[in-house]
Amino acid sequence: MKEGLITVNFVGSNGETTKSMVIAPSNGQPREFNEIVWDRKRTLEEFRRTLEARDDRGFEAVMRALDRLDCWVEALGQLREEPVPNERLGAALLSFWISYGFHIAESLNGDLILVDVLKYLLPAYSGPGLRLYRGELAIRYQRVVYGISWTPELAVARMFADRRQHLGEGDGVVLQIDATPSMIVTGPGEHTGYLGETEYVMDPRMIGDAIRVPI
Image (cartoon, rainbow, N blue to C red; front, side, top):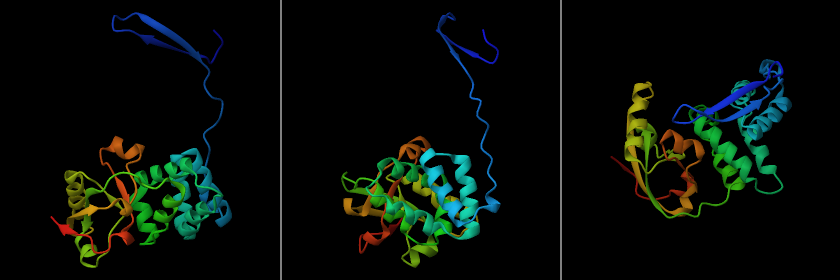
């Protein structure tokens, strides 16, 4: 066998090899990121590239650059310049939101451009109305300010409410809402099912006078 090739053997329950596969490892080197020297143009380009590539390591570097340059809204806004909705790009954005939601939400500081971009890129939600819950900061609830991530799992919402206090953010409460389809932007993405959180993205501007009960 040529040097550098790798043989992968598939073994059955009886211990016998059922299949073999020879593969060649990639010669590509891991990409290095030096986001400290990026300007806004380079940062916006890398934001789009890492989204399309679903490059977690690259996206972490991009987030540091976006924070330094304070251009999160601009980075997300460029995705609405797509000539047509792009479901693949929307799914990638949703995936990164699920992975880095706390950081992204803090960086956006209440700006709902992420909701608008997801509405543009993804097909409209077509499922039924649902009873959803959210673990929210008590002070935000008192100010009638709500986040965009909700779940039909009460235990998950309670976990997030408890975690806020453990992280030193303040007291948490669990909110309940009977959401109409028009309030829901999109259903669970691929990562949220894996995490067991069953996350639905809601548009807080659509909640209006819907029942919101801390439980």
